[in-house]
Amino acid sequence: MTKYIFVTGGVCSGLGKGITASSIGLLLKAKGYKVFMQKFDPYMNVDPGTMSPIQHGEVFVTADGCETDLDLGHYERFIDEELNYTSNITNGKIYSSVIEKERRGDFLGATIQIVPHISNEIKNKIYEAGHTSEADFVITEIGGTVGDIESGVMMESLRQFRMEQTSANTLFVHTTLVPYLYGSNELKTKPTQNSIIDLRRLGIQPDIIVTRSNIPLGDAVKKKISLFGSVPTENIIEAIDVANIYQIPMNFHNQNIEDIILNHFNMKITKSNLKYWEDLIKTVTNLKEEIEISLVGKYTELHDAYISVVESLKHAGYKHKVKININWVDSEKLEKIDNLEPIFKNSKGIIVPGGFGSRGIEGMIKAINYARVNKIPFLGICLGLQLSVIEFTRNVLGIEDASSTEFNETCKNPVIDLMSDQKNIINMGGTLRLGNYECSISKNTLAYSLYKEESILERHRHRYEFNNKYKEMLEEKGMVFSGINPQSNLVEIIEIPSHPFFIAGQFHPEFKSRPTRPAPLFDGFINASTKHKLKR
Ligand code: GLN
Image (cartoon, rainbow, N blue to C red; front, side, top):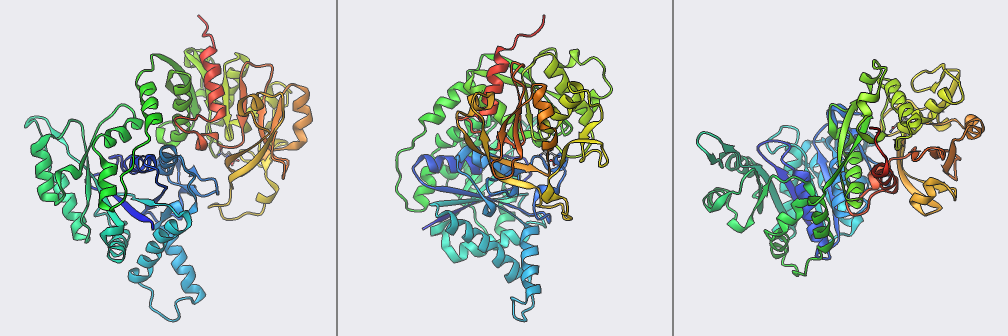
């Protein structure tokens, strides 16, 4: 029988609720239990797919093609399980599904109300995650802060859920902030007390409180939170600031959070299998060498827009024992600069990740040209592949007006064009080519040497594709199409063998990278970067 764990947040956002939920998931999995995770986002968008990456951060894509919140990336990286469409629920999804049912007449004349219709829909999504995953634990994180207007009905649904399932099958973890005030030089518990009061007003009593602070709480502060929060002191778990998020599970483990949870549910306390994670932490905290990698994109003002790319670079760095320092390069700014040398002179690799729209693309093309001509290791992702093809067509084949119909609809040489099944699409939301597609890899290529497999599955999120009409012309000049989707013949991987390391994928390898198992393209890219010699 599935047990349900809910993770809420108080005081303010950005406390690391997602990492808290992920760490609990990792620790329960390390006890041999099956874990599934879910995020509830209280916004009215159906999914984050149509939101600006600068506002919302990265859109994480699951294997089954659901566009989701970036927290799902943390979940997958920590618990190493593939999540799916049941893992990200938004108010937009809930309301549109209830309204659709109402229009169909499913409610047989009833007046549709927030309670019970919306709250039932929400509870059903939690049950659905339990039934379809058959996990021992479903961990559901609620976005936003307790007391927000938007999340009100979600919290009410959780109250009802606990009533139905009792505390024998449910557990609430509340994450809060315990700030340190300079001047009075003490930790303040009042914000935590107040957020617990807010939670109780909604009918929910937390079982575990996770406190974010920059110094240890000490016994007196813990006792105070215990008294006002009505939780035993041992159920107050300290989340002290750390240099690297992957350290957090070990910190929680040292405070026995997983045993507290298993005791709550009267479940067997087995031995933890955490050796692999301890080894990772040893590596992470002992990286002596550092290398700089330039990330060229148009959303660089919000680093969260590239979070899975950044994590994947780090994962590959762990394998090759180097710390990755990212040189964030705003592609739009490159457009006005002639000499790129000062920008890239310390970089041992250049990466151009995904993106949409025409702003900043000429800057990315310039960066790709710089990497190709100067033989600097290069990795292109999705838009990065498309722009690599444009750069090569323009500068090697001399076809100066080569472009993508995404940027120039009437372009005469559309080396990147709309996929045929995309031509009649009107709705922008959820209609990209999404999720897992197969890619067949040719032997004797860089791609094959990295993947060591002839057939792979990678996750996609794009509307445009390489235009096969230009394939032969590009091949003649030295571009190799090493990965192809066998069903549609779409190009999945390109490479330039005369370059020390130049490769790009139409998919997003960053979604499958794990801290202890870097994605092959990132692994190869960082390996090549460590070997690249900087000009003196
Ligand atoms: N904008 C391009 C497309 O839609 C690339 C998308 C991406 O980089 N994720 O095809």
